Image 1 (cartoon, each protein chain N blue to C red):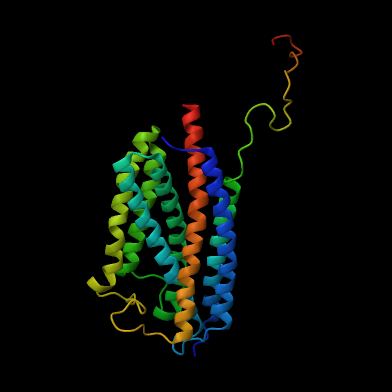
Image 2: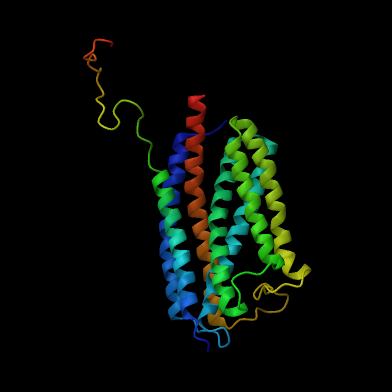
Length: 56
Length: 231
């Protein structure tokens, strides 16, 4: 029997990597979208304070 | 338009559950193929690629065929859900196609002595993937959702027409790629243990397809709703 187990391992690793990577991508993209604008990234939800330079 | 955010969330949740089952089944297929299925005498262990490569190819063809069916339904009914399904199925088909074109050469090298040959089946598979790459390029190039869905549907139908032709390449041309060993007019030419693992592979990749496509459909519907809101 030919000694070619490395090719088999490579193919099975490729399948696992592609399937898991795509599953992870779908998981990330399928997360509930966060509300945009205020409330994101530490921006306060309440009215913003006037700018120190007085321009609003 | 009959798209709903709740339906999209439900599709994503169900798709995730089915994908988790599919991943467990894939792990089971690995154990079955590597531990409990005998190696073929002449090809050696590389023959075990047989339990993932043809099932992935079948699932890819299923994905592209259903893209075409959904595209026809979109053109007939103008229901955006069919467009979302067609897009989802085409994307999953491309991922499965990636598995096919990566595992094929890995099997070809030890068995044929070359990574790649411009054999009719191999060439046609690449053409099919290029057509669906064009499908996504087309979708990305058109801003108007209605126009995008209409033109993409035409491209999806063209891609679907390649599916039966790709299947027939091994009969129509003198190819290096073998003809099917299971779908035969006579009985399958496989020992029972190999046949069991091979058919399990088909079931596993079908479940993978369903889980992936449901999630991607939900994501697509959400995007369409956001697009409609922003317009």
